[in-house]
Amino acid sequence: MSASRVLVLGIGNILLSDEGVGVHVINRFQKSFAIPDSVELIDGGTMGLDLMPYFEGRSHVIVVDAICSDGEKPGTIRRFSGSEVMTMLGERISPHQIGLSDLLACTAVDTQLPENIVLLGIVPESLDTSLELTPTIQAKVDDLVGLVQGELESAGVSLEPKQA
Image 1 (tube, rainbow, N blue to C red):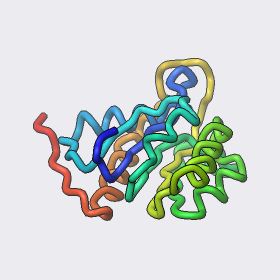
Image 2: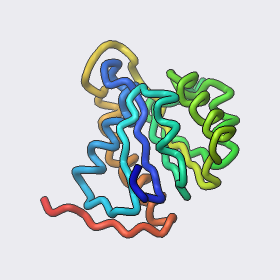
Image 3: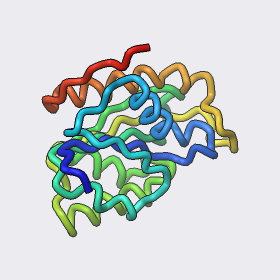
Image 4: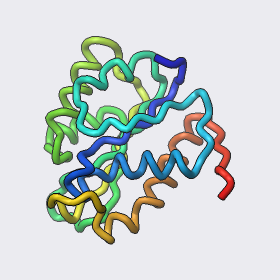
């Protein structure tokens, strides 16, 4: 385990179209910025409880995931922080919320859930079998990358864009 104090975690199943948006955002972020030693990016896929050790010793955790939100149109981005994250997971906001909610609950009991935890979620358009994001969600990936950048800057992390 590295000494990184900030964890950025992309969650999702890339085999189910928009369900994999968190992983796509992490990949784009990594291609866009030089990642400082104080930050660790993890493609969490559908690992669930296997991600628990990655939470240890973190001051900040930023999770990017697809969320289920009744009545909101696909592409809607929502930000949840602190206790809102666990509350919203209890309301089944993520298509694979059992893994993520169990992970956060076990982390809160076994270690200490970071006080600064943020979930950046986007309402998916399709969960059909496909390796591609729908155009609606693909058009929002850069917005999510920008939100991750903003969260990191709020945590005191300086980022340098990679040269094209």
